Image (cartoon, rainbow, N blue to C red; front, side, top):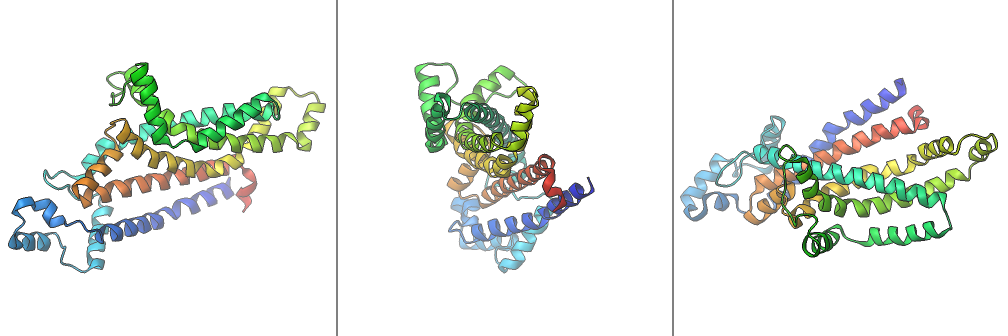
Length: 316
């Protein structure tokens, strides 16, 4: 336990440094974008005099390092700036949009894990037989399918041709839990299938490797129940897939941004699209940093879970 806590603290201690690096990268990239903040904020009233007043008031005339440290100071206080007129705090916009993206990501993650476990374990138990052959074809197709294209196919089949689910929009779970599930079912499946196919292949490979080990043959010879053997094998086999789970969550987060646009969901994807099309640097900056930090936090959590699943590396 002491070794686990030491490694956990090491992972957590690196987070502030990584967040500072993310903030620096996002800030520098957007500062060199061709967008004119003064023109976007002032619009038709962007006269030379008005532009000069605006740039002076917002520190746009300051050197880049000065602007970065000012931005960093605001960031540490939870201030991500305001959007272009109509002016609204970026944090308020993110606070409204991020929960939906988080819901979609978590629902897609749960669905991907369930599908991956069912497909991967079944394929390993029936290796080189027809279920395994079917799985290989399905998994390759799942990996090859882009999530946005799959989303369009799902809308056409299950929302237009067979109106089982809505074509888009979002229902708050507080208003209707069934409506919430229906509104996120197709987007979540669009996100989950490519991730599930990739994870299932890893689980199958790891399960096959574990099933050929001596301790499994010994357990079978000792007459242990098959369910107990499978649980032990699965626990050991999950170590490898968990190493890439954090990356897959990052894929789900980034994919959710695109999927939200296809299904007209008012999440972070809509904010980024609004910021890019409207030239709103503060909005784009705030949403990108929020998604990047969320991805970083998820990876740290996955690392800690990996330490719990694989006790052998706690002594490292």
